[in-house]
Image 1 (cartoon, rainbow, N blue to C red):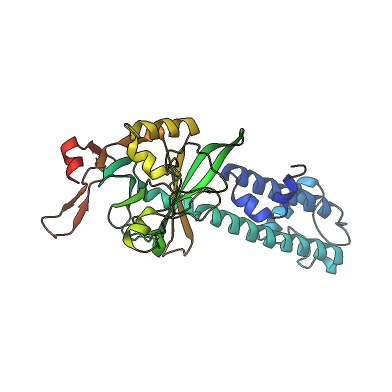
Image 2: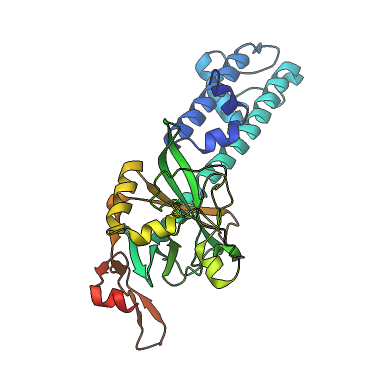
Length: 354
Protein backbone atom coordinates (compact mmCIF):
# COMPACT_ATOMS: atom_id res chain seq x y z
CA UNK A 1 0.00 0.00 0.00
CA UNK A 2 1.70 3.24 -1.11
CA UNK A 3 2.23 5.96 1.51
CA UNK A 4 0.76 3.76 4.24
CA UNK A 5 2.95 5.56 6.81
CA UNK A 6 0.65 8.55 6.52
CA UNK A 7 -2.11 6.58 8.22
CA UNK A 8 0.06 6.31 11.34
CA UNK A 9 0.71 10.06 11.36
CA UNK A 10 -3.03 10.71 11.41
CA UNK A 11 -3.10 9.14 14.90
CA UNK A 12 0.23 10.17 16.48
CA UNK A 13 -0.85 9.47 20.06
CA UNK A 14 -1.53 5.75 19.57
CA UNK A 15 1.44 5.49 17.24
CA UNK A 16 3.71 6.72 20.06
CA UNK A 17 1.98 4.56 22.67
CA UNK A 18 2.52 1.37 20.68
CA UNK A 19 6.21 1.81 19.84
CA UNK A 20 9.06 0.65 22.08
CA UNK A 21 9.62 2.53 25.33
CA UNK A 22 13.25 3.26 24.45
CA UNK A 23 12.13 4.97 21.25
CA UNK A 24 9.50 6.98 23.13
CA UNK A 25 12.08 8.23 25.64
CA UNK A 26 14.51 9.10 22.86
CA UNK A 27 11.84 11.07 21.00
CA UNK A 28 10.89 13.09 24.07
CA UNK A 29 14.50 13.83 25.02
CA UNK A 30 15.11 14.92 21.44
CA UNK A 31 11.96 17.11 21.49
CA UNK A 32 12.99 18.81 24.75
CA UNK A 33 16.49 19.47 23.47
CA UNK A 34 15.13 20.93 20.25
CA UNK A 35 12.85 23.31 22.19
CA UNK A 36 15.71 24.38 24.46
CA UNK A 37 17.98 25.04 21.49
CA UNK A 38 15.32 26.92 19.48
CA UNK A 39 14.36 29.21 22.35
CA UNK A 40 18.01 29.59 23.30
CA UNK A 41 18.58 31.06 19.84
CA UNK A 42 15.52 33.30 20.28
CA UNK A 43 16.90 34.64 23.57
CA UNK A 44 20.06 35.62 21.73
CA UNK A 45 17.94 37.95 19.59
CA UNK A 46 16.90 39.91 22.70
CA UNK A 47 19.04 43.07 23.03
CA UNK A 48 20.69 42.87 26.50
CA UNK A 49 21.01 46.64 26.91
CA UNK A 50 17.41 47.69 26.23
CA UNK A 51 15.87 44.61 27.91
CA UNK A 52 18.34 44.74 30.80
CA UNK A 53 19.46 41.09 30.61
CA UNK A 54 22.88 39.57 31.14
CA UNK A 55 22.63 37.09 28.23
CA UNK A 56 25.78 37.65 26.19
CA UNK A 57 26.49 34.14 24.83
CA UNK A 58 24.62 31.12 23.53
CA UNK A 59 25.59 29.13 26.63
CA UNK A 60 23.94 31.76 28.83
CA UNK A 61 20.89 31.79 26.52
CA UNK A 62 20.62 27.98 26.70
CA UNK A 63 20.88 28.06 30.50
CA UNK A 64 18.17 30.72 30.62
CA UNK A 65 15.99 28.56 28.32
CA UNK A 66 16.38 25.57 30.67
CA UNK A 67 15.33 27.72 33.62
CA UNK A 68 12.22 28.94 31.81
CA UNK A 69 11.11 25.56 30.40
CA UNK A 70 11.48 23.62 33.65
CA UNK A 71 10.44 26.55 35.92
CA UNK A 72 13.65 26.29 37.93
CA UNK A 73 13.65 29.97 38.83
CA UNK A 74 16.33 32.01 37.14
CA UNK A 75 16.18 35.26 39.16
CA UNK A 76 17.61 38.22 37.32
CA UNK A 77 21.33 37.44 37.32
CA UNK A 78 22.03 41.07 37.94
CA UNK A 79 19.43 42.33 35.45
CA UNK A 80 15.97 43.81 35.84
CA UNK A 81 13.28 41.46 37.24
CA UNK A 82 10.85 42.77 34.60
CA UNK A 83 13.50 42.98 31.86
CA UNK A 84 12.97 46.70 31.39
CA UNK A 85 9.36 46.18 30.17
CA UNK A 86 10.77 44.54 27.04
CA UNK A 87 7.85 43.11 25.03
CA UNK A 88 9.89 40.71 22.93
CA UNK A 89 11.49 39.12 25.99
CA UNK A 90 8.10 38.56 27.60
CA UNK A 91 6.74 37.09 24.34
CA UNK A 92 9.58 34.56 24.07
CA UNK A 93 9.26 33.54 27.73
CA UNK A 94 5.49 33.11 27.38
CA UNK A 95 5.85 31.09 24.19
CA UNK A 96 8.38 28.73 25.76
CA UNK A 97 6.24 28.29 28.86
CA UNK A 98 3.17 27.35 26.78
CA UNK A 99 5.16 24.95 24.60
CA UNK A 100 6.61 23.35 27.73
CA UNK A 101 3.12 22.85 29.23
CA UNK A 102 1.85 21.08 26.12
CA UNK A 103 4.97 18.93 25.82
CA UNK A 104 4.81 17.98 29.51
CA UNK A 105 1.15 17.00 29.18
CA UNK A 106 1.92 14.89 26.09
CA UNK A 107 4.88 13.20 27.76
CA UNK A 108 2.97 12.41 30.96
CA UNK A 109 -0.03 11.07 29.04
CA UNK A 110 2.01 8.81 26.76
CA UNK A 111 4.30 7.51 29.51
CA UNK A 112 1.29 6.82 31.75
CA UNK A 113 -0.39 4.86 28.97
CA UNK A 114 2.83 2.96 28.37
CA UNK A 115 3.09 1.87 32.01
CA UNK A 116 -0.66 1.22 32.34
CA UNK A 117 -0.97 -0.91 29.19
CA UNK A 118 -2.94 -4.11 29.57
CA UNK A 119 -0.09 -6.32 28.35
CA UNK A 120 1.65 -6.10 31.72
CA UNK A 121 -1.57 -6.87 33.62
CA UNK A 122 -2.14 -9.89 31.38
CA UNK A 123 1.11 -11.55 32.51
CA UNK A 124 -0.54 -13.01 35.61
CA UNK A 125 -3.31 -14.73 33.61
CA UNK A 126 -1.84 -18.15 32.97
CA UNK A 127 -2.83 -20.41 30.09
CA UNK A 128 -1.64 -23.97 29.81
CA UNK A 129 1.37 -24.51 27.60
CA UNK A 130 -0.23 -27.64 26.18
CA UNK A 131 -3.67 -28.28 24.72
CA UNK A 132 -5.36 -31.65 25.16
CA UNK A 133 -7.54 -33.52 22.69
CA UNK A 134 -9.75 -36.12 24.40
CA UNK A 135 -12.48 -38.48 23.26
CA UNK A 136 -15.57 -38.37 25.44
CA UNK A 137 -18.70 -40.39 24.65
CA UNK A 138 -17.60 -40.91 21.07
CA UNK A 139 -16.71 -37.26 20.34
CA UNK A 140 -13.38 -35.45 20.28
CA UNK A 141 -12.82 -32.29 22.32
CA UNK A 142 -10.08 -29.68 22.21
CA UNK A 143 -9.25 -28.43 25.74
CA UNK A 144 -7.03 -25.83 27.35
CA UNK A 145 -6.74 -24.61 30.94
CA UNK A 146 -6.40 -21.10 32.37
CA UNK A 147 -6.37 -19.32 35.73
CA UNK A 148 -5.61 -15.94 37.31
CA UNK A 149 -2.64 -15.66 39.70
CA UNK A 150 -3.74 -12.39 41.31
CA UNK A 151 -6.26 -12.20 44.13
CA UNK A 152 -8.45 -9.70 42.27
CA UNK A 153 -9.76 -11.10 39.00
CA UNK A 154 -10.86 -9.45 35.80
CA UNK A 155 -14.44 -8.25 35.56
CA UNK A 156 -16.63 -9.72 32.79
CA UNK A 157 -13.89 -12.09 31.65
CA UNK A 158 -14.80 -14.15 28.57
CA UNK A 159 -13.06 -16.35 26.03
CA UNK A 160 -12.91 -16.53 22.23
CA UNK A 161 -11.07 -18.99 20.00
CA UNK A 162 -9.95 -18.86 16.38
CA UNK A 163 -8.32 -21.32 14.02
CA UNK A 164 -5.68 -20.01 11.60
CA UNK A 165 -4.90 -22.28 8.67
CA UNK A 166 -3.98 -22.41 4.99
CA UNK A 167 -6.82 -23.24 2.62
CA UNK A 168 -7.07 -24.09 -1.05
CA UNK A 169 -10.06 -23.11 -3.15
CA UNK A 170 -10.36 -23.89 -6.88
CA UNK A 171 -6.66 -24.67 -6.99
CA UNK A 172 -5.61 -21.32 -5.51
CA UNK A 173 -3.97 -21.12 -2.05
CA UNK A 174 -5.32 -18.76 0.61
CA UNK A 175 -2.83 -18.40 3.43
CA UNK A 176 -3.54 -17.61 7.08
CA UNK A 177 -7.33 -17.75 6.91
CA UNK A 178 -9.05 -17.23 10.27
CA UNK A 179 -12.14 -19.14 11.37
CA UNK A 180 -14.03 -18.67 14.64
CA UNK A 181 -14.36 -21.68 16.90
CA UNK A 182 -17.51 -22.30 18.90
CA UNK A 183 -16.85 -22.80 22.61
CA UNK A 184 -18.93 -25.44 24.35
CA UNK A 185 -17.61 -24.85 27.89
CA UNK A 186 -18.13 -22.15 28.95
CA UNK A 187 -21.05 -21.84 26.56
CA UNK A 188 -20.43 -19.04 24.06
CA UNK A 189 -24.20 -18.70 23.56
CA UNK A 190 -24.28 -17.01 26.98
CA UNK A 191 -21.10 -15.02 26.45
CA UNK A 192 -18.44 -17.59 27.37
CA UNK A 193 -18.04 -16.00 30.81
CA UNK A 194 -15.16 -17.16 33.02
CA UNK A 195 -14.39 -17.38 36.72
CA UNK A 196 -10.63 -16.87 36.80
CA UNK A 197 -10.23 -17.38 40.55
CA UNK A 198 -10.01 -21.15 39.94
CA UNK A 199 -8.52 -23.14 37.07
CA UNK A 200 -11.06 -23.31 34.25
CA UNK A 201 -11.02 -25.75 31.34
CA UNK A 202 -12.05 -24.30 27.98
CA UNK A 203 -13.66 -26.93 25.76
CA UNK A 204 -14.25 -26.89 22.00
CA UNK A 205 -15.99 -29.83 20.39
CA UNK A 206 -14.47 -31.07 17.13
CA UNK A 207 -17.73 -31.58 15.26
CA UNK A 208 -18.45 -31.22 11.52
CA UNK A 209 -18.79 -27.42 11.97
CA UNK A 210 -15.43 -27.10 13.71
CA UNK A 211 -12.50 -25.64 11.71
CA UNK A 212 -10.38 -28.41 13.31
CA UNK A 213 -12.52 -31.08 11.66
CA UNK A 214 -10.73 -33.04 8.95
CA UNK A 215 -12.41 -32.14 5.67
CA UNK A 216 -12.13 -33.88 2.36
CA UNK A 217 -13.48 -32.48 -0.89
CA UNK A 218 -16.81 -33.99 -1.85
CA UNK A 219 -18.74 -33.50 -5.04
CA UNK A 220 -21.91 -31.44 -4.89
CA UNK A 221 -24.60 -31.24 -7.52
CA UNK A 222 -27.60 -29.08 -8.09
CA UNK A 223 -30.09 -31.77 -7.11
CA UNK A 224 -28.31 -32.51 -3.85
CA UNK A 225 -26.64 -29.30 -2.59
CA UNK A 226 -24.66 -29.01 0.61
CA UNK A 227 -26.78 -29.50 3.73
CA UNK A 228 -25.82 -26.98 6.47
CA UNK A 229 -27.48 -29.19 9.09
CA UNK A 230 -24.79 -31.85 8.58
CA UNK A 231 -21.57 -29.85 8.27
CA UNK A 232 -20.08 -26.40 7.69
CA UNK A 233 -19.30 -24.77 4.37
CA UNK A 234 -18.16 -21.16 4.04
CA UNK A 235 -19.91 -18.71 4.43
CA UNK A 236 -22.80 -20.40 6.24
CA UNK A 237 -23.56 -19.60 9.90
CA UNK A 238 -21.37 -21.55 12.29
CA UNK A 239 -23.40 -24.10 14.27
CA UNK A 240 -22.65 -26.71 16.91
CA UNK A 241 -23.57 -30.36 17.03
CA UNK A 242 -24.32 -29.94 20.74
CA UNK A 243 -27.13 -27.49 19.94
CA UNK A 244 -28.99 -30.10 17.92
CA UNK A 245 -28.41 -32.79 20.53
CA UNK A 246 -29.62 -30.62 23.41
CA UNK A 247 -32.67 -29.37 21.53
CA UNK A 248 -31.45 -25.76 21.21
CA UNK A 249 -31.56 -25.96 17.43
CA UNK A 250 -34.05 -27.66 15.15
CA UNK A 251 -32.40 -30.71 13.66
CA UNK A 252 -33.77 -30.96 10.13
CA UNK A 253 -33.34 -34.11 8.13
CA UNK A 254 -33.05 -34.05 4.38
CA UNK A 255 -33.20 -36.93 2.00
CA UNK A 256 -29.70 -37.22 0.61
CA UNK A 257 -28.39 -39.22 -2.27
CA UNK A 258 -27.29 -42.70 -1.27
CA UNK A 259 -23.75 -42.13 -2.44
CA UNK A 260 -23.44 -38.89 -0.45
CA UNK A 261 -21.74 -39.14 2.94
CA UNK A 262 -21.68 -36.37 5.54
CA UNK A 263 -18.53 -35.30 7.34
CA UNK A 264 -19.83 -36.73 10.62
CA UNK A 265 -20.45 -40.16 9.05
CA UNK A 266 -17.02 -40.02 7.42
CA UNK A 267 -15.27 -39.57 10.79
CA UNK A 268 -17.26 -42.43 12.29
CA UNK A 269 -16.04 -44.77 9.53
CA UNK A 270 -12.38 -43.75 9.77
CA UNK A 271 -10.08 -46.41 11.19
CA UNK A 272 -7.72 -43.75 12.57
CA UNK A 273 -9.56 -40.45 13.14
CA UNK A 274 -6.72 -39.04 15.27
CA UNK A 275 -4.16 -39.71 12.55
CA UNK A 276 -6.48 -38.16 9.98
CA UNK A 277 -6.82 -35.02 12.13
CA UNK A 278 -3.06 -34.79 12.64
CA UNK A 279 -2.45 -35.12 8.90
CA UNK A 280 -5.03 -32.41 8.16
CA UNK A 281 -3.64 -30.05 10.80
CA UNK A 282 -0.08 -30.52 9.59
CA UNK A 283 -1.07 -30.09 5.96
CA UNK A 284 -3.00 -26.85 6.64
CA UNK A 285 -0.42 -25.64 9.24
CA UNK A 286 -3.20 -25.17 11.76
CA UNK A 287 -2.77 -22.81 14.69
CA UNK A 288 -5.40 -22.23 17.39
CA UNK A 289 -5.48 -18.72 18.89
CA UNK A 290 -7.16 -18.22 22.26
CA UNK A 291 -8.23 -14.73 23.39
CA UNK A 292 -9.17 -13.93 26.99
CA UNK A 293 -10.70 -10.50 27.53
CA UNK A 294 -11.87 -8.69 30.64
CA UNK A 295 -11.87 -5.38 32.48
CA UNK A 296 -9.41 -4.55 35.23
CA UNK A 297 -11.31 -3.31 38.27
CA UNK A 298 -8.55 -0.88 39.31
CA UNK A 299 -7.79 0.92 36.05
CA UNK A 300 -11.07 0.11 34.20
CA UNK A 301 -8.97 -0.77 31.16
CA UNK A 302 -9.74 -3.69 28.88
CA UNK A 303 -7.21 -6.51 29.21
CA UNK A 304 -6.60 -9.06 26.46
CA UNK A 305 -4.54 -12.22 26.80
CA UNK A 306 -3.47 -14.15 23.71
CA UNK A 307 -2.09 -17.65 23.46
CA UNK A 308 -1.61 -19.85 20.40
CA UNK A 309 -1.27 -23.60 20.01
CA UNK A 310 0.31 -25.39 17.09
CA UNK A 311 0.37 -29.10 16.38
CA UNK A 312 3.50 -29.62 18.50
CA UNK A 313 1.68 -28.02 21.47
CA UNK A 314 -1.27 -30.44 21.32
CA UNK A 315 -1.29 -33.80 23.12
CA UNK A 316 -3.83 -36.51 22.39
CA UNK A 317 -5.55 -38.74 24.92
CA UNK A 318 -4.35 -36.58 27.85
CA UNK A 319 -6.02 -34.61 30.59
CA UNK A 320 -4.78 -31.88 32.93
CA UNK A 321 -3.47 -32.73 36.37
CA UNK A 322 -5.45 -31.63 39.40
CA UNK A 323 -3.62 -28.60 40.77
CA UNK A 324 -6.20 -27.50 43.39
CA UNK A 325 -6.11 -28.68 47.00
CA UNK A 326 -7.78 -27.70 50.26
CA UNK A 327 -5.92 -25.65 52.85
CA UNK A 328 -6.08 -27.62 56.14
CA UNK A 329 -6.03 -24.45 58.21
CA UNK A 330 -8.64 -22.26 56.47
CA UNK A 331 -10.49 -24.76 54.31
CA UNK A 332 -9.93 -22.55 51.26
CA UNK A 333 -8.62 -23.49 47.84
CA UNK A 334 -4.88 -23.69 47.24
CA UNK A 335 -3.67 -23.65 43.62
CA UNK A 336 -0.32 -25.24 42.83
CA UNK A 337 0.87 -23.42 39.70
CA UNK A 338 3.89 -25.72 39.54
CA UNK A 339 1.48 -28.48 38.43
CA UNK A 340 -0.80 -26.23 36.40
CA UNK A 341 0.77 -27.12 33.03
CA UNK A 342 1.17 -30.83 33.72
CA UNK A 343 -0.91 -33.45 31.93
CA UNK A 344 -1.16 -37.22 32.17
CA UNK A 345 -2.21 -39.85 29.67
CA UNK A 346 -5.58 -41.51 29.97
CA UNK A 347 -5.46 -45.29 29.74
CA UNK A 348 -7.71 -46.95 27.18
CA UNK A 349 -10.13 -48.55 29.64
CA UNK A 350 -10.80 -45.15 31.26
CA UNK A 351 -11.55 -43.66 27.85
CA UNK A 352 -14.03 -46.39 27.02
CA UNK A 353 -15.84 -45.89 30.32
CA UNK A 354 -16.54 -42.22 29.66
